[in-house]
Image (cartoon, rainbow, N blue to C red):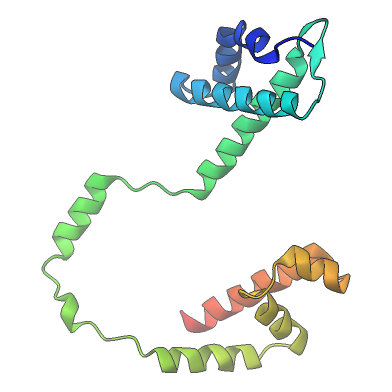
Length: 168
């Protein structure tokens, strides 16, 4: 068995250029390639044979790099960025408002509204929401009940939307 990491590192610049072709800058490409080395090391430690003709399998590496890039883009999609200058200007403009005079939140009243809104729902929707809201995961509930994962997930999502519409 060859030392997979040494063979992979011989093509380091090729891997970086490959990831850059996906649409990354050089620093991000370097990070993704570094993660790829970690994955290759783990696969080799597990005894997986991912070599081809006594060198690293280029197609496997391409798939790993592409998967890491796609995962990164998905994560970036969930993160919102705020321009600090806009935030600073907003804070300066709102400084004139006295936030101490704002109405305090009556949590007991808010809780009663949530319970009232939940009681308006069909019993199944309410029960799914109660179970999934901090008690059990969607996949675990799906395994235990035999109800489709997506059915449970969509029910939970719809109940949350219902509550937001009622409370906001």
